[in-house]
Image (cartoon, rainbow, N blue to C red):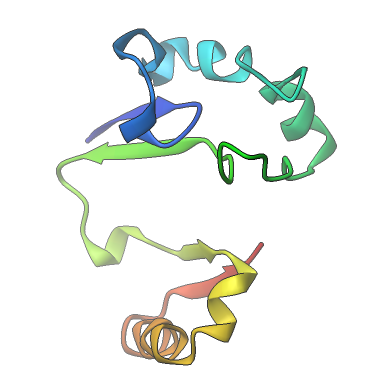
Length: 103
């Protein structure tokens, strides 16, 4: 199994902003709101949304992933107000023993 990482939504980035694990430092060195991503990571803080949208580091898993490989699923706290979607998340948690963690 392998993965690629992008500093934002993969639909909004350029080809040279796609990194693999060996060069993930490129993602962490990307600036957002005048700060580097690694600063947010070290502080354990989430970057605030800007007019360009909500910002996050996206990982694209490239094959070979099974539900048994997943221990924890992180979801935005805003998803709790979408009751239909949140009910599906809770069912997923119960059916597959995957811990849900909001951020």
